[in-house]
Image 1 (tube, rainbow, N blue to C red):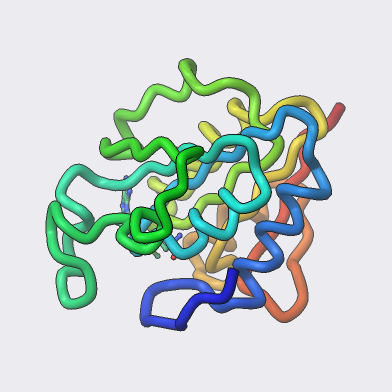
Image 2 (image 1 turned 45 degrees about the vertical axis):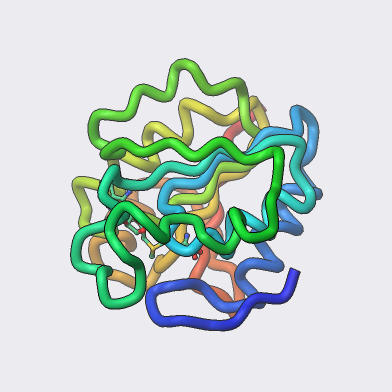
Length: 169
Ligand SMILES: C[S@@+](CC[C@H](N)C(=O)[O-])C[C@H]1O[C@@H](n2cnc3c(N)ncnc32)[C@H](O)[C@@H]1O
């Protein structure tokens, strides 16, 4: 799915890469995303996954109100396209309990990029993956994200801002 580029979102090559990983790692068909925003990546994932859960803050994200209206426009892109296989969760990822989510092939982390949130989100993501599943962490070049990645075996994906961590089988 082709999507216009906006500030604070990924690029088309990144959305295509994330979708390709949902296909490459497909076993359960389940995908989870930390950080919905406009829902561009969500829509690209929903095209190829059986089900996508996507999590964002209840008010639509503080500090991003120039592009996304609080409580109104969250996920507007996937909503416009009327995907029936997306569940929108609205909760702070710090309090989010991932235990109700079935095992996922792929989790994409792209929410708050400070170290505390990155560790919270990625550790929860790893707990949600099926054995052999794939974690993609966006904005891997941020020092706070790179600090977390340095604590784990990972691969930087060329031409994207993704790093990939694989859960062992
Ligand atoms: C960079 S945007 C996500 C972009 C989206 N993944 C995409 O590809 O278009 C980051 C999103 O994370 C959300 N966010 C920030 N902190 C969060 C938290 N603690 N819990 C849940 N969502 C959070 C923001 O509200 C914002 O919508």
